[in-house]
Amino acid sequence: MRRDGHRQKRAWTTAISLVAVCALGAACDSGSSSGPAASSASDGADVNAAAANPIAPGAIDNAVGQIDGMVDELMRTTGTPGMAVAVVHGGKQVYAKGFGVANMATGAKVDADTVFQLASVSKSVGSSVVAAEVTKKAITWDTPIVANLPSFALSDPWVTTHVTVADMYSHRSGLPEHAGDKLESIGYSQQDVLARMRSVPLSPFRATYDYTNFGLTAAAESVAAKSGKDWATLSADTIYTPLGMSSTSSRYSDFISRPDHAIGHIKIDGKWAPTTFQREPDAQSPAGGVSSSVNDMSHWLEMMLGDGTYQGRQIVSPESMVPAISPEIVSNPPAGPADRTGFYGYGFNSSVTADGRTMYSHSGAFSSGAGTNFVAIPSADVAIVTLTNAAPTGAAESLGMQFADLVQYGERRTDWFDLYGPAFEDQSKPFGSLVGVSRPAPSTPTQPLASYAGTYTNGYYGPATVSERDGRLQLSLGPDGRATYPLTHWSGNEFTYSMRDENAEDGSISKVTFDGPAMTVEYYDDEESNGVFTR
Image (tube, rainbow, N blue to C red; front, side, top):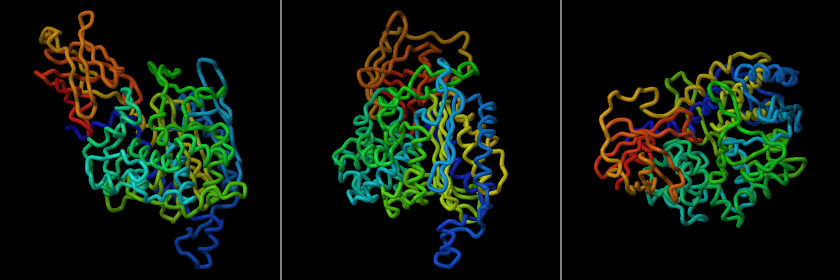
């Protein structure tokens, strides 16, 4: 079994996780602010409260004043169709603006109320939903998943009974990276995907970090079950409505029905164009299904920077939220003894810089056209959120870190796009050992096509049907065979099919090899399965 089989999945994890590591670098460090934490440190009450050096007077105003220019620069460099940015400081929104277009086909403009898909920034927002339930003492972060979702199971019975909400929100359950994502892409429902988790081999429990959308979703669904509400309703009742986030939802139908929403864009032959397929993330809504505007996200960031308080009302207690934004597991181990370590909390990247400055953040990415990011520096009482409607290029992350540089130093000390751009570009490469390979000439003849036809099955991916139609083979996967691919003969018993979805970049090619009663599908040779389907 290949251990790199998840590179082609919604494969932005490596690039996105650079935010946590970069937040630790020298260009992200510099003293502290003169806010509440700094005052407690200065009188000796808490040596861990803040760093020694205050942020220079006017630094935040200076940083805000440079946003327009930085956005213009990044949009020119990447060609990103639309972007919206907001900054929160001192308990209020101090900047909010839209740039470019929400839809290249219509020319509709982006403004601060344009609704974007947040992708994995949904994890941080959802974490605050859980924290609200912890505040009400409905659950704790250490509540086992099975306490409120008794049907859930993993391959290890002991882990099944012990895995908690915290374990799933920190991606330390032992589930492999992006477990379940491919099941969703071939049509399985949330319930089906979670049920199939019990057949997945696990890495060491609470000692392994692997970013897993459906693991986190299981935790959120267990919290929702305890509340007696579905996740989208619970999110609205606990966070969106109290914060006045009237354009925010955890339902895809709400996003797509907004009059002012941003359409995803992808590159076709090197040019940006509206995507031909929409990302409908309801099955993993807690992990990637929130849609919002930067105006709405400003309300959420005000609460986060306000220790859970919004306009004088306590929405979430500090005691329930602090663990989520604190380091809970190593997400990026250092390559050497002088290197910094990246950490993850409960739905947040969380790290402490060399000067003791806490930064928490998260990025989101849909290859169908969303690149999002926020960065919060609580000791400076400032946060920035950036939403884009393009397959991720690193523009959102670069803006966040450039802004952080300006806040801390008054200058941009690192060319962040030189770091993020290549990382995202590398992660957007198509999957398949035959990509860029010419078909053998002459190729070995195929067997009679009827000899390959039949129903095959895989313990994790379920049934696969191979049928002959109009002189060629067709592969059908998922419930009711709803994911269908025409097969092209390659050589001998080898065939190929092309794919393009949220987990497979444009130009991806999977090899299909028949060997007696077995069919091996290259794309599904991963941490969940060896890709073998047996007739």
